[in-house]
Length: 146
Image (cartoon, rainbow, N blue to C red):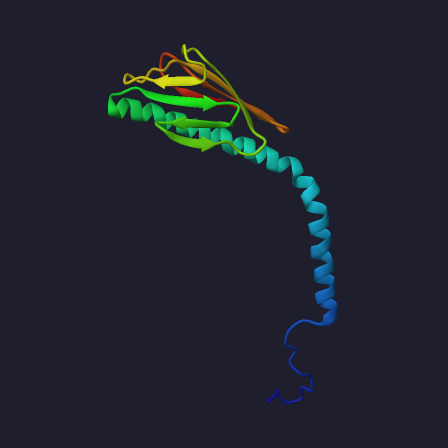
């Protein structure tokens, strides 16, 4: 029962006009946002792959030290993948890798039990730009530069 003196009915839900305005605004946003984010997706994939590869290389160095053994990282630029101890990881669609190693075997980076490495310079690139990773031969430290 309604309070005394109130003849208004309680309103449940939305009116048709409110729903139409909301749907029109949502449609407008869906039409405008994707073209603005086109390059953002490429940049996000490049940043993701550079972080993924940096972390994988640091893990390989840690495994070499902890396991007191040599750990090899193999790069296959044509297939856009890298492998550590037989576990392969593919780079994102559109991201290309160029690898320069000091090892006698092209595309092979070695981490040694003392923490050092054979050294490498890795370039990841796509339409949005490029990222560089370097592996210091003396310390095995992996650095990423924007």
